[in-house]
Image 1: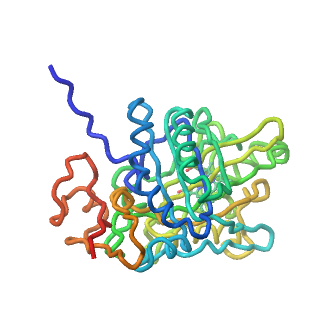
Image 2: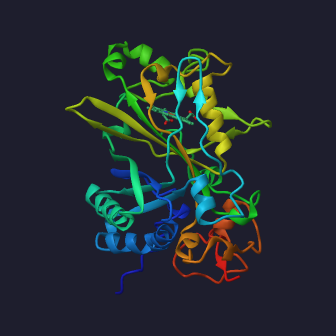
Length: 363
Ligand code: HEM
């Protein structure tokens, strides 16, 4: 009997955003040198192929690579039209704590069940960009047991699932030219673990808003207004909760006592994440900032647009002025787009979600 062919979704671009949790991840943030735009365009078009070259040999490793493009790099590489929500990360300065904005043009979020796969791909991307871009932040994250972060709490429990997850991260017909794309905010947090560990567990639980051992949410009348959960549960004007997808990873070095959490949050609009950061750093109401920040310092901060794999694959070496992007023939909600075939596109037959609508057409 022949083996059924594994229907694997694309493992690069925004389609890979919702890849299942893995044991390892590498986060690379780079700045692109002046004059290196052409080389970077060519590399971006090759990311899918490089991922295949590394990942195909260990299919169970589930190697994925999400690529993010910063606001300034978008203009240098692509020009108009721009994703509606793409802008430089502005940072958020509260009275006590600041979400810094740091440099960064490109993000590679590389995930796999094995660090060697992540490392091999990171190394290949790095080699291709040698002389064209500088790595300004590199974090090798690991999954801790019980899905806990280095504060000792289970991290990721309230991430949306299924259709709600897709709805949370995928741009819909509110930005028709970029349906299927996404946005991502990254921040590297460094913890003062000595101070945190000196807090009684009950106080730690009040800072997070959940119990430590059993990961149960504290009741509303017990959960403090400055807890991490209270400030990150946000609703829109109609009372609908606004969700994001987080794939935080612990990282650290015992020798230098550097212990941290790499925060990475995806959303269909950066506004949701920026509202959360406003609540955390400035406070809601102002002054009522997130208690977690008394023990965790954000040392980086960036915002990127995440194009579909198809968009990246089709990047030609042409100049920005020669590029146009196709209007999707049937702009739909992200969930609908993912489940239905675009009338403009034949079945790719590759198991993709068919949400890539950013295909370039020759001018
Ligand atoms: C030091 C960095 C951070 C740590 C250690 C951390 C840890 C946690 C933990 C332990 C939870 C509870 C379990 C869960 O639902 O995941 C949580 C929830 C959450 N965090 Fe964070 N987090 C950090 C930064 C952030 C940032 C920067 C944001 C947003 C910009 C954020 C957004 C959220 C959201 C939306 C929830 C779920 C709230 C809910 O619906 O219950 N976190 N985080």
